[in-house]
Each structure stands twice: as structure tokens, then as C-alpha cells.
Image (cartoon, rainbow, N blue to C red; front, top):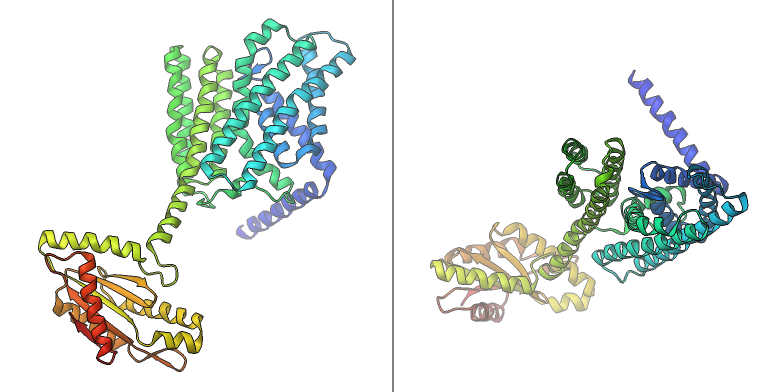
Length: 489
């Protein structure tokens, strides 16, 4: 049975690869699939119209924006053909009784009015995201602003083209523009990022994939992802059923609680799963608005879809910002070569530990060491060999120190070890342990490595500079006495 299941999986995988390869290698097949997809998403929006020409949301706007972003001008004939076909349907559905040429003209006008704003909006977004001049939060803000502006321009241009074509009256225009705009904007904000990913499967040669340019992303779902989605969908059902039974506008605002699970998803899952969960929740909201007859509250649900999606988009930046901050922290606090504490972090930490030890009347010692005749290593073997000696030595010292001790590179080949809760006798033991394990080691072929150490115990009137100065003076004494030794100030 298991073998049969495995064979079936292989067969299914093979069929899927063949179908995908067919569409990837056939421009005509992709064009037909895009046209069919555009018509399907347009009709899915038309099914939930709550006033003439205005839907709860308009997924065709999201698909057009994504197609024009990924494919560009070559996609315009496909969208134009779709616009003409849906205009024919609209003429029959609303019983407008325009002749064929009038319908054709109306369809072309609708196509231009729909395509031009979304083309320029998508091109602008593509230019901004590819320029790499924007941070992720600014890129998200740019996407949201472009979505709002391009959908607004498309709303007025499309509705005016319908008025010009006598498909709708100017009075209908004044009632339809706001829900039309909010529905188009919802279609772009919620669905465009999802369509971006799907289209890049069909167009693999298009090198720029917007969701892949978001850093700090977990590539696979967490084990809890399905439960997070279930919570989101359950919350949609519960709040909308309450609105259905109470028939209260106030109760419809409960849908805004959907922000909470989607913020959770956005902060803990990758960008694709975030937009996928948004699409599922939004689709369920649109479906229940229609099935439960909640058209009286439809504007609340329209705004909720946009607000939840906008918050989730900003939350995408949280993992990326966390990763970026972690990188910056490493650059500031960790020495790039030796992976020990940087001079800045070492100084800050030493001052904190020093004040705390003085306040609590505890012991503290500072140990300073450097490599004997380090210049000879660089001169004889090159700076790369010298760098490797610093790296190998640092790894050895880390293994010899205690968990609470802090090792940092102060500069060049000079290192500091901060020893909290340590008196001079224990510091001497730590120093001798370093000498015992390090001196004489052959970290570079033909070169025996040795270090000299100086240390000082904290006094009540010490600050970091005075303590370091005394330890450094002891290091100087160790070198003057012949190196390969330890001295206490």
C-alpha cells in the first residue's frame, strides 16, 4: 500500500511538472490561461455586487495590477479582450440594449480606463522596489499608496467611461464611486501579492520576484500555521453570524478583531503565507456578506478587509526588521574577524560591570593580553596568516574561559578579558591557565605562538580607563621581563 501511494505521488508530481512546463514554454497557453483567470476573477467580483457596478471587492483589479507588474505591456491585449467580453456581459445583464458597435466601443474604453492606471501604478512600484533605495517599511508604504492612488484613478476613469458609453447614469456614478474604489483597492492590497507569486511560477524567466526580496523570512510554515488560519476563519464566521442574528451595525464592527490573528501570522510566518491567509479570510468575508445578506453593513466589511490587510502588510516588516537589527547589532557588538566582543561593546559592558561590582562591593579583574612578536608573523607569513592566528587564538581562549567571563578585541592583536566576581588570586589562575594551554602552540607552520598577560584588580575609585591603564601597564611589564609571562599591577 505504501509503495502504491509512493508511486501515485511520483505520477502526480510528474504530471504536475509536465503541465507546468507546458505553460512555461507556451506563450499562447499562458495567454489563454491569463484571459480565463481574469474573466473568472471578474465574475467572482460581479457575483457579490451590492450596487450596480460596485462589488464588495474587485479581484480583477488585483490580478491586472499583478499581471502588469510581472508581464508588462505584453499583457495589455489579454486584459483588453477580457474588458470587451465582460462589457458584453454587462450590457446583457443590465439590459442596457446597446448595439454591438456601442458595446465594443464601451469595452475598449473600459479596457483603457482600467489598464492605464494599473500599468503606471505597477511600473512605479516595480521601479521603486528594484531600485533598492527603499527600506522594507517604505516599500510597503509605497505599495499601499500606489494601490490607493491607482485604484482611485481607475475608479473615476472606468466610471466616466461607463457614463460616456451610456452604460450607467451620472447619478449612479455619484452613488457607486466610493464602494467601487474601496472594492478595487481591496482587490489590489489583498490579492496582488498572492498573484505576484502565482504569476512568477508561470513566468520563471522574469527575474524579479517581489516576495523573495523580503529578508528575515522563515521559508516553511510553522507547525502552528494551520491553527492560526483556522482561528482567523473561525473569527470571521463567528463575528458575521453575530451580525446576521443581531442585524446591528455595531456588531458588524467586531470583524476588526481579525487584525489580531493576522498580525500574529504576519509576524511569525513568511510573506507568501501571510498574503495567502489574507486572501482566504477576505474571500470568506465576501462569501458570507452575500450568503448571509449583510449588504446593509457592506461598507464596514470593505473597510475591514483593507484595514486588516494594511496592518498585516506592515507586520511583514517585523521579521525583516528583526533580522536587520540583529545584523546591525552583530556589526556593532561583535568583532568581524575574531567573533569576540567588539571594542565598543566591551567598553560598555565593562563600565556596567564595574559600577555594579563597586555598588555591591564585589571583586572584578581585567586581564589584557597580546601575541608576542605578532609583527614578525605578519612580516614573514603575510597579514592573512596573522589574521588566521588571531582567529585560532580567540577560539582557544573562548574554550578556556568561564561562562561569565567576557573576551573582546581591543585593537590589533590586543585582547581584553573581563572577569566579574573575580579576585586577583583567581585572575592569576585564569591567566596561568591561558599561558599553559596557549604558549608554544604551533598555530602557524614554523611559528610557535606565545602571549603575554597583564591584569589588575578593581579598586573602589576605578573607572574603566584607570583599570585598563593599570592592566595594560602590567602587560608592558610582562613583555619587558621577557614575554611569555603574566604580571599583576
